[in-house]
Length: 132
Image (cartoon, rainbow, N blue to C red; front, side, top):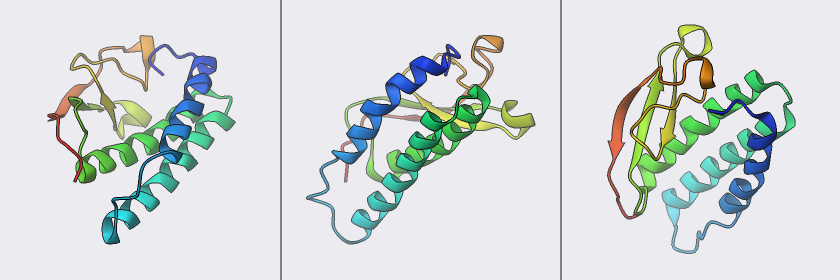
C-alpha cells in the first residue's frame, strides 16, 4: 500500500490468507476459540475484498478493516516475538483517520503512499509478548 502498487498488493494477499487459514487453533478453547474464529472470518473477508477490487482506494478501504481486525487480534492474543507499532493517519478517508500496524517505528503511510508518506504518528507500541 505504501508503494501504491495494486499488483504487488494482490501478490502479497494470498500468503497472508493461507497463514490465517493455517493458524494452529488446537490450544484455543471457549472464548479464545470464538474470538479467533470471528477475527479470522473478518480478516479473510477483508483480504478477499482487497484482492477483488481493482481500484487502489477501494483496496485501501478494505485494508482499514483488515488493520482494525489485526489490531484487535494483537491486543487480545499478543504479538509473539515481534515488536509492532500501531500507527494512525488523521487525514485518511476524509479526515476520519485510520490505523495500521507496522514493524517499524518510522511512519510509512499506507493510506496515502508517496503522496504523504510520513503523515501519521505512532499511537501505541506492542512489545514482544507471547500469545495467551
